[in-house]
Image (cartoon, rainbow, N blue to C red; front, side, top):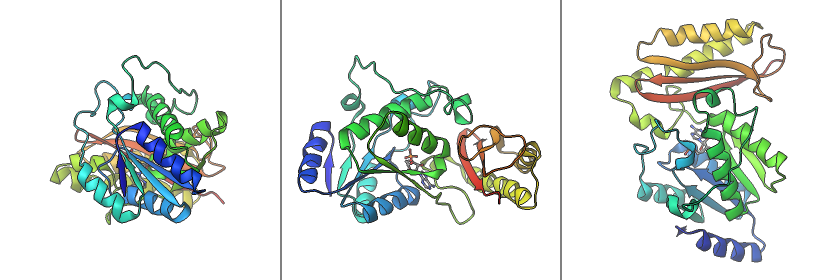
Length: 282
Ligand code: AMP
């Protein structure tokens, strides 16, 4: 597996591969890789001739009081995981390589970015869209892989690609969970032992919501309330949001008539975790 720290090195490698007629898959990440990321890399390796993984803790998508400095990093371990998973190139730029001191161009989106995580993270998706668009320009992948774990991010990227005619196929991948249901996340490493023990409450709460929908409940507020009730039983949990939204548009619904996404963000201690579940309405 090759590694690159500069955009120029990536471009040179990509043009050699494209010259040979090879297809390219891209897996954008912030590193501290786990089995969730690994599943994205595996899907890309299966569907493309060459897979590029980017590891970049993107300062632009962190708010001023968020965990940019503390975000876990372990490039050596990430490189070993990428190589074992079959990636052909690991791109790990420094922030200065991605953002010139006088950088002033952004990709921004209205609507889809305003609800759910956008409420408490108002500049987050502008940072995500800008960096992902830059990665698309640098790597020019045929396909790019994103986890359903970040359901709003996946929807935002799909919309950006459609609206701006970016020639890339976006592939969504299912959420990979720990045995107790906790969605795998680099941020799980922040959790103390009691917090880790408390964290599966997110998935338990989502499952309660799904159970009600499966039993025929069609009042979205009642579903959301039941999810909150489960979370309220865990003293270490503090709710940021619990929302029942249309699975396609991510708009809030009151009466459930089509497939919905039950999504939540919950602080366990100081760590903000997100999770979601899609419920099919037949
Ligand atoms: P991150 O490094 O957290 O920015 O995530 C990079 C990519 O991996 C994103 O597309 C995430 O949605 C995806 N991802 C993170 N955790 C999981 C998981 N548990 N299951 C599936 N995909 C994930």
